[in-house]
Image (cartoon, rainbow, N blue to C red; front, top):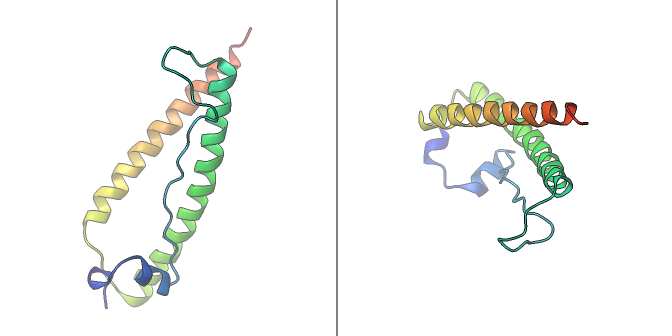
Length: 111
């Protein structure tokens, strides 16, 4: 049976899939709206976000690989919505990659 008729998260778990929900990243200390973050604070927050995203992306990749194998072996189908969502994620990941490269270039231009 395809996944379209399945009932939700518990069904994914029964198939051996892990549902990965993104990690919320917030600065360690909340600042009032008049406090400007320092370079160190910004880099600390970015480092934390990249670390959490790395963990999330590794988990998602493993889940995607299991899902692809399951879909291929069972000849199941999914809604075409997954194609649009996947393309959207790819665009966001490319944008994040470009932004991280910009940060690294900026850091390379230190005095």
